[in-house]
Image 1 (spheres, rainbow, N blue to C red):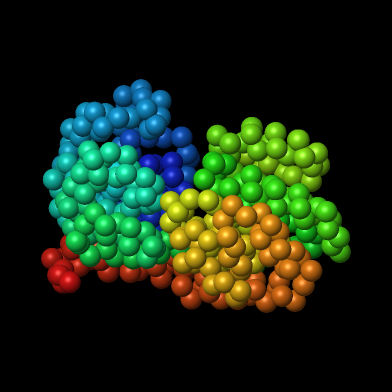
Image 2 (cartoon, one colour):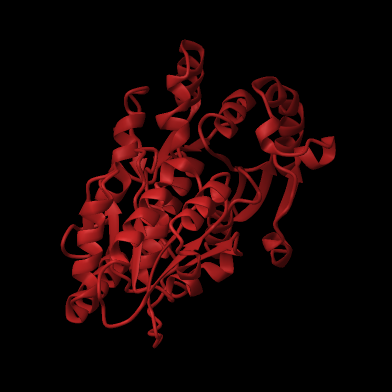
Length: 371
């Protein structure tokens, strides 16, 4: 049985998905994380060994780590690799865990780019750019969740970049028709400036001026540094009785929040939104979506078929698209059905991960075909 060591944030829902995917494909899995363990999802995975560097060194969280900290943790990583004796290591996030993976000297070495590590990190300075390029150079296989991010990554390397979409569990994220006295518009995102939640609130306030067959409510699922500012905007607009901030929710509860929605909205303003995972989750639940025209959304949403793509930073256009859906029940239902079909065909995580397994096996066996 082949063994993988993942270098990744142990608390990330994305890490959880990768680990469970590998286990279902009969890989042995270990995790080396810089973050102190906060999430309890791994408790059910008795055979997964986790090494948390920060927990052992009393570092509060990963945001406090510097490149010097990565170097200090390198000895612990090398010891962990020697102890686990994996067939492959796979780092997630090219500017942190990717740096450690490159420094480890282990091969075969897989590197997944995630978003801000590609769109932001190499642009900070010449040194950041060179570190990023070196991390890519050391990797035997580079993975990207989207074509748009692969194109951005290709600016820093001549290596082939494998596009492996970060799909969803279509058995968990499935349609669940709920009769409600409201039309519920909502989003599932971190409450950070780049995700345009303030534009969503502005769009919602415009919708409240219109007449629909049912009253409206706005569901904002998630937490982040912008929460207080966003709550103040809602208070200022005097719509607190119509807007629900759920705060952070557990990963296994996310699907149920999507299923409460009539329309999912994501109005991100930054192209570091490289792959709209929450948008794909919503579409998998047969929810029509309205999204901004950043690169990640344009790749997963078929405009006018699985949802509507509108110009970013333009609440008026988002308002028109949502209004169109709210006024036409048949259109809303048809687009939702199209969305579910699209996800089933393109973003079923089991199918997506099977493509990763093929790559793992090629590199482990040495049967790598150079392009």
